[in-house]
Image 1 (tube, rainbow, N blue to C red):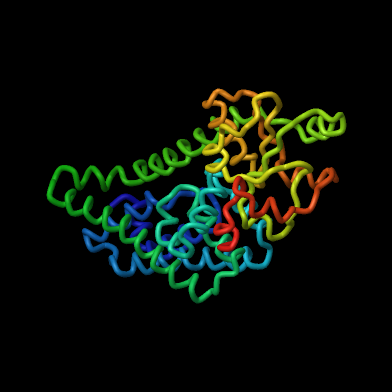
Image 2 (cartoon, helix red, strand yellow):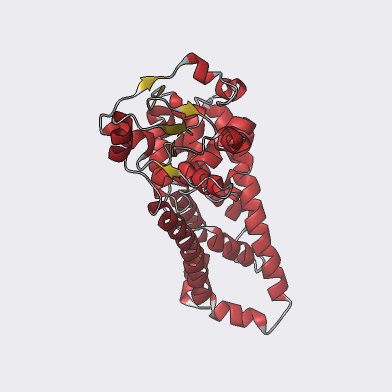
Length: 329
């Protein structure tokens, strides 16, 4: 048996626990190939399927628990830190927040199947002040469903290979190379997708100093605050003159977007992800004068530029985030 395969068999449960926990903590080392391999090894009884499942679920809960309490203690700052570690930062913040707003704790049941949500779900649950006992129950069920899906897929592959006397020795001898190639492929795909998104973003974003100059000069600009209701908890202020929309509601009300001035979008996502994606969608509607604000709300705030208190009528405006969504946060 190849040394790499022997090593996995000898320390398999510990490797699974540590590897999965590290991925849940935000390090972009995909555990899917390892779990598929572990599942296939249970077909030859070199690993125990129940113990494999236990090790993976324990790793999930250990990593998620750390982020839950950090999210509970530090709120949105910790959420954005987690997203910066992710290879899916172009989508992870808004997608996870929307899942929690719409589905509550049930979002934890599917979070691990959706790129970008795996690590971010736990700190958002903590930020939302969800009781830990409730979080633990749903996180356990979601982790178990995810683990069963991958390990049983690997087990099925192992059962198929066992039936072919030619394929089994080849898989054993090529195990190390196949595993490394699978991990590299996962990482490269996600990095390339992220870099393509960032390249498109950099060509269109507006510097906060330039927006400040436009406001000081009295230039007509249309500023849109795309933050999620959870993002208003630590600082319920907006840029001067900003109106509140979600990405979906802004697109739904595209007829109300002025065509005679610059449209400035901002959020609190790393790399201005939500604002950039929304800007791209608006441009497809034929509105070209739309740009994401570099650094978003935090970038503007850190420069000491003016902010105004969120007016009550903005919070309940028909064009803004629905009151139902705000109450859920």
